[in-house]
Structure formats: structure tokens, C-alpha cells
Length: 306
Length: 115
Image (cartoon, rainbow over all chains, first blue to last red):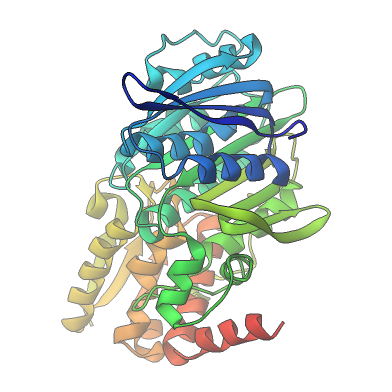
């Protein structure tokens, strides 16, 4: 299967009748192809019950992708499948022990002496207070972070919050998964929020009785002033985020159902996957060496807001 | 006309005004004041972080219950950051359109389908 997902379908242990699945994810980065690997992995295992899923991670694994992988593995665990990480390259293992991901699978945490991880965290949508502590501990309060102006830090935090709150309000998910990573040498932060909720397409089509495909649904949702809320206006969060990402020369990716949407300095890429992601992933990449002055006085007169 | 000052931090018990549900608490107070015929001064003093989701429920939905003229005449904000001002203005402009033309969203869905 090339350098992507490889898997031996199954081997049944006849004495216990436990189905064993062997899968390898290789070179998982923040690319369309990597998300496709995760989707294929999900599609190959989604109907399993009480089986052993042996997962290998090889080549490279972008730490922030722990959020998307964690979301998928939880769906398997909900069907009483057991997850075994039994062939992880040492480098990947180190990162996933430092960012707490593997501690959710019974492994001991490793101290992050480089201070470049932003922990993997699994939260209930009602855990807003925990998310606040997480944001303070992992982002705002970190003194060892790459040099960032106060304005950029505030805008990044605000952007992350908009996405978290979107997942709270719209996704109908049981859990929200977050994870990130700093790249001090590249002056970048990657941050990912994933959920296993209903996704953009179903949410929009249910609300409007429409028949958008997943790519169209995401494209509609990132437009300014579009919302599925019935009584309350909205739809500004994603539009503001897109504007900030543009100014910051960052990147924003949305994966929902079979839809992929990416916006960065080269423009928009929107295309379908084969198979669907069972929820939504929003991945954000920010430049920390952004010297724009976000605290510039706006031209809005305080008496002219309403 | 009497003036009610509503302090956001005190109302939600937090310097992060981020969750939509918290915005509902602020909205309830503004509504109470409006229904009593009062003016409202909404104080953002010490608010360190806010989302548009919070502002939509706290302020945006006023346009569902009151005319633009009433809101303009009775609402005032103070101690708001520059970025907060930008977000609030966007929320207010969006809310005005949303409640004035509820079919606009459906039309924009059709627009995407025709692309």
C-alpha cells in the first residue's frame, strides 16, 4: 500500500475467538494524505467489536495529530475493542509519551525537557473550566515559548477558543480532543481540536433541509455570517479565524465527514476523501514570529457599535 | 431613564468571557433592565478573553427582541479592548442582518449549490 496505511486484515485466535487487527500508520503529518490514512484506518475497523487492534506508528507522527487519532481510537474502545501500540518507532514513542497521549493507554508519562509539547487532552463539552486551565497552562502561561508578541498570543488563544466553543455548541460530541506542538526552530505552533460529533454536513443539512456534500458544507460554514443556530445569530468565529490565519500567514484545515478544506497563503484547497471521518478535526498552524500589531487602534467608535 | 451597569466579570464569575452559556446570563440581565425601561452600560472591565459565541448570546440576540433603535438608544459599552470592539461590532452587524432577513442563510445555501 505504498508508504501509507498498511494492514493485515485480521487473524482470528480460534481458542478465544478474538479477532486481531494489525494496522500501521506511517508518516502521519498534517496533510490530506495523512488524514486519508486515518480515515481508511477508521473505515477498516469501525465495524469491529471485542477485537484486538494492534496499531503501529512508523516514520513520522505529527504530535498534534494525536487529537484526531485519539478521537478515532475512542470510537473503537466504545465497541470494546482493545488498542495495542506494539510497533511504534522510538522517536514517535518519545513524543507521544511526553505529550500524554500514551498515558491514556496505560503508559508512564515522560518529562518534556524540551518544553515543546502541548498536551493531549480529552474533555467533555461541559468541561469549559478545564479547557481554560489547559489553555493557561499550555499556552498563555508558558514562559519558555518562542518569542511571541502579546497581541499574537492573544489572537492565537482567541482562535483556539472559538474552535473549542464551536465544538461545544454544534458537534453533539461526547468528547473533545485537543493537542498541539511547538516548533521553535520553525517559529510555528500546530494545534488540533477533534470531535466525534455529527459533522458540518449533517448539521447544516438537518437545519436547512439541504443536500450539501461535506466539502460544500465546510465551504459554506467558513463564509462570514453563516450559522446553523435557529434563534441566535452567529457564524463569525470561523470567518474571523480565517482572517487571522491569513494575516498571520498560518494555515487552517477542516476535516469533517468526507470533506477536506485547507486555507493558507496559497489559497483554498477543498476536496473529498474516500470514506468519512466520523466527526470533525480542525487543525490550526500559527506563525509565532508574526510582528503584526494586533493591538492597533480600530476605527470603531465605541458609541457607534449598536 | 435609569441606567443599569452590568459588569461581565461579576455576572459570569470569570475573566474569560468565552462560552455561549455564560453569554446567556449577561443577556438575561440586559433584558431585565430593558424590560424595566432602563439604559444599560455593559462593562468589559478585566475581561481578558472573549469569543464571538459569547457575544452572540450576550448581545447579538437583543436584536431578536428589540428594534435596532431601542438597542442603539439604550446600550452602551465601556472598558472594552480594541480587539473586543472589533468582535462586538461584527457580532452586532451580523445580528442585525440575521434577524432582519431570516431567509438569507437558506439563500446562501442555494448559492453554494449553484457554484
